[in-house]
Image 1 (spheres, rainbow, N blue to C red):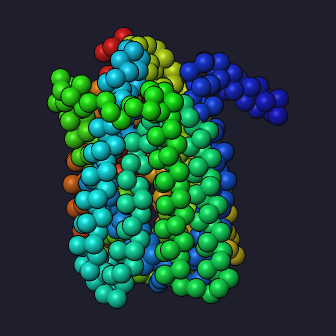
Image 2: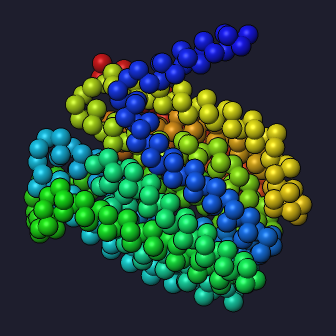
Image 3: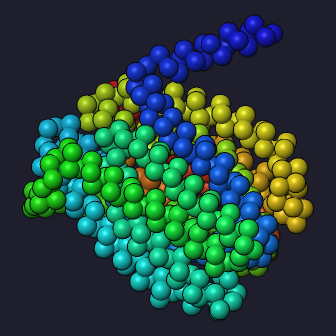
Length: 448
């Protein structure tokens, strides 16, 4: 029995890593995972301290504040990181460096304007968010304070995209780790000082600001090293003929991102709106624990997308298939094992680390694990469609799923609370993953 298992593992390992493409993807993702794994451990410790310090209700208010800021930012974001990866890679592969420079410059300027607009909306809507989400108008200033993170991330997406396309994953991982260490250090200080919500918000704000500014500086340095110090002087008029194509791509990635707000990024806000902060606190913890399943998988899309873009630009369709197939084997195997472990040990983990008052989060955790298993196995679904030139398909699919999920939210969450929200999120991941994977398979079949 043991011999047969060993033989199977050796065979699986050989199948996964015999191809140079998948080895490169795994190598790049390993840089991110090394930081993500350590950052996740720090984040879990940070979450335990914050949960114990604030209690369930204030923990739920904190979740609403963070989710509100994320929602506004994503609504006005044009996903400039994906634009940079898609077109800087394309022009770099063809040797057209001036246009590659112009794409990065244009993306950075667009993202900067979007970030300023997002912060303005946060300030404008903060009183309503405090009234209907936190159920306490005195928390308005907290929403605005945390919203400053948007300004710190002025060109963070474009910067991340540039570093990824030039395989600077080690640098990205190191900066992510620095951000986590700074944030945890500040949270520990607030915890030891018996601080409250204001101290926690400032800790998060300062930690994320350090990470965002460091990322921006790293990207600017990379651009200067690649293209010279005067790269930013490249005229945007070079993209005049490609303006419609770039706008089309950015528009559909923005629509897709905006729809994902309903489908997966506004979970805590819906629970906050229709229920109380206590249920939001339970759901916040369930989502945090379920995200452990995504730890090694979360870096894979970032590492896979540039590789898929390169292979699609070269019309190496077999290479694309290899990356997708082997990536699913890798991500699916881990996710199944991690889900089973969390299902078995999740209850005592919550009991001893977060205190018994958080135990109602466990049923939601079990529900979420099912959906995450599908989402992880087909982690490449959206990136593959973008690389294959079908940025419109994720947008259309997300629109349909958003409509269905919104109906479910309005009918079920007011009555069944956070458990209904967990079930709807899992359903979205399952249906969306299967349909997208089938579409990618069909597109590859058409191209040979």
